[in-house]
Length: 93
Image (tube, rainbow, N blue to C red):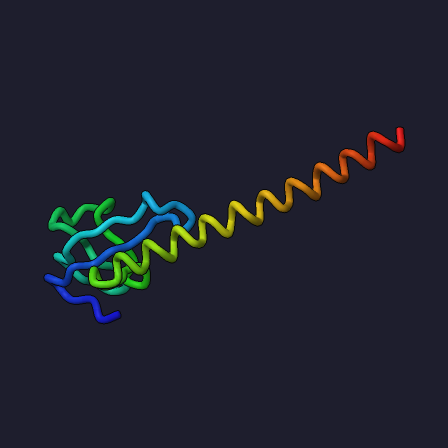
């Protein structure tokens, strides 16, 4: 994405957590980093590679929610494997 001062952007600190989606306006660009919302402090900078145009916010949020759903399904399936392993171990005692 071409990151320019004044561009509205969104980014996510954790792709498994929909509530970590943030949005703001780029106020400074330097190297691989952009600063958002004019404070120009270390905590206000984001790697440009993590920024998305604000226009795709809803689609990005849908993807993040789907990733969270798939991760939960995977974790639940692994729990079944561990439960079966525990059952087999207890039966062989």
